[in-house]
Amino acid sequence: VNVPLLRPRPARLSRLLAALAEIENSGIYSNFGPVNTRFEQEVLHAVFSDIGACLTVSNATAGLMIAMRHAIGANPAGRRYALMPSFTFAAAAQAALWNGLTPLLCDIEAEGWTPSASAEDALIKRYGNEIAVIVPYATFGNGLDLDRYRRLSERHGIPVVIDAAASLGTLDEGGQGFGMGFPHPVIFSMHTTKPFATAEGGLIYCSDPAVADTLRAMSNFGFGQPRLATLPGLNAKLSEFHALLALAKLPEIDAVATHRTAMAQRYRERLEGWTFQRLTCRRQAITFMPVLLPERAAARRREILLRLGADGIGAGTYFSPHLAEHPYFADTCVAGDLSVTARIARRIVVLPMSDAITADEVAAVCAALSRASAIEGG
Ligand SMILES: Cc1ncc(COP(=O)(O)O)c(C=O)c1O
Image 1 (cartoon, helix red, strand yellow):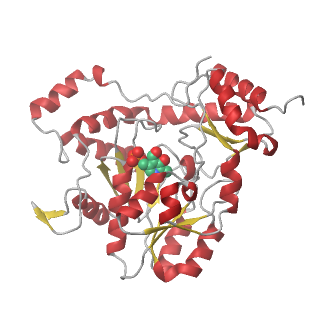
Image 2: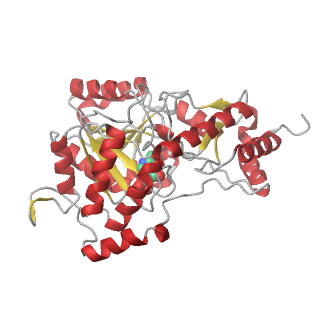
Image 3: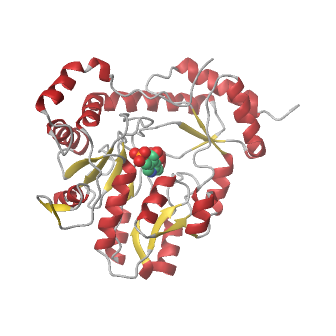
């Protein structure tokens, strides 16, 4: 077998020659051009029922940087922490550090692997006056209790930025696009490894169009007026070519998520008795298939992955190491109690998923994993 962990499937640019020629003829290659505008309008319609506003960014990391900078601006001085889970990707911590903030790492919930409400509450109690922004991660495209974050923000006067890097295509428990109606920025990635695959790209959603307008100006050198910097900014604009990739992927968004969900269900059936993420969404836009190794096999994880590799199967250990275990973050972040994170991270394995993975391939992966993780002689 040959089943790689990920098989990126962005739209085929080589089949979009007419649209490419149109970009060339327009002479507009970036700066919120017509293709980008069309994508923003269509994604707002298709995913967020035309409520609020969307803007593209060059990648989700730049989106997080801008949204966190915007959050700090609204805050009294002296607030220096960005509260986020340790069980996430490096991008959120780096974005906080670029803003001069110190990531304050919290634990996750044992079953859904999203930030633990009690861990967040405990850190807010301890550091509340010093927390500049709360940055929850919608882990692996799972749902989050966004109403709770809205209330938390109102109660404590702390802005929220949602890291929804893996969630474009996720439907919340009510069946709406994840994030719809949320008044704080929600940041999605359109990186080639994500279900909503382009090459590089990100999308910011916010129910408040005024916030989206400000973030757009910040993504364009802070130009609040033509060529006049009125805000902090950087260049985080999406090129017309990348916007074309996004526009061409949009019609597939439901089919991609539906296929991946069906294949995730196969994994759950084939690996009966194994521990999977508890879902709090109607449909998860799943990037890869996370599963916890049985406790007794966790110490042999490296060897199990090598065996899978020898069988032609790609697998990974996202997010292990978790943030607090990265050398740079160990030096620059402050961590709360991370005992659940540590327990989950040492057992996690992520298995192949893609737009085109077949049920037979899933069966082969499950068989190989069961073989590789069986106790020697038992
Ligand atoms: C949780 C999380 N946040 C942020 C990002 C950054 O996204 P991008 O690659 O678009 O900058 C990623 C990317 O994989 C991610 O997994």
